[in-house]
Image (cartoon, rainbow, N blue to C red; front, top):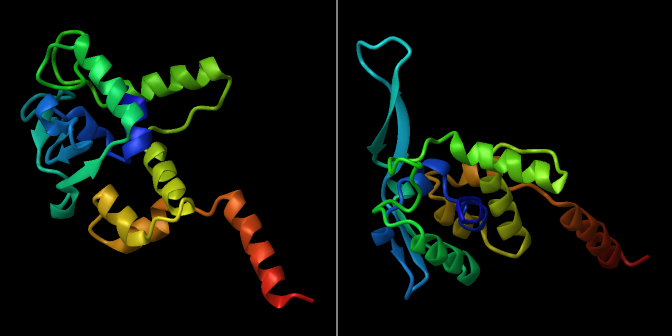
Length: 177
């Protein structure tokens, strides 16, 4: 459910880990993104870190975002097995470690016979496929919660092979000789 959520919403890993069931509105297919989980050093403790809840990256990161039907169904099925306040928790009922989705993605890729990618690349893929599907840069920027549209345009959206092939055809049709 976590990997599907990340791939189909473009949420940051920490934003997904910080979700509570109250943040998910199944009637309107919406997710409220207003917090994130991060890791910090414990003051006075060498090599000791802790997870903590904090504000999102910037004020535009606080947002309501839509969720597709299949991802919502998976989350609601997940909820039946997870009685906790938080959508994703460790086996001890605590916040999920930010490294856990990476381990899940590696395992999933291995089972499928694919090379693994960093979890954050799911966010890039989401942006790229939205762009390929016709979403505007502003729509993608708002969905990802970016402050600056240049981040969306220059870092998160990439040309796909289908788009490059389409450019060649469009140019050829435009010149028409």
